[in-house]
Image (tube, rainbow, N blue to C red):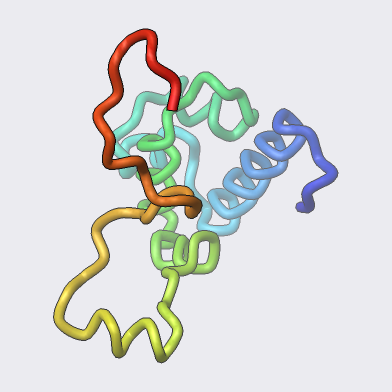
Length: 115
């Protein structure tokens, strides 16, 4: 899988891999759907790579196949640099800082006036 694939091709490959893992565990679609708490048709669409399925269904199937711990490989946790960790020792970051640039004007803005 790489960045050159279209979304459709990527979803199809993910679906094929899920089907291969299901077969490697010797599970029928019905058995996996039941273990994942999904309808059979939802699992079938997921294995076909059809985009109509929800992400929660994908997560449930991955859990039933024992793949949930691999999500960390897909979306690794971001760690702060050692200096940033020292600065944030007592407080956890909760927001992004936004754009950097000039400081906002302290003068009150009114209609018809230009700064």
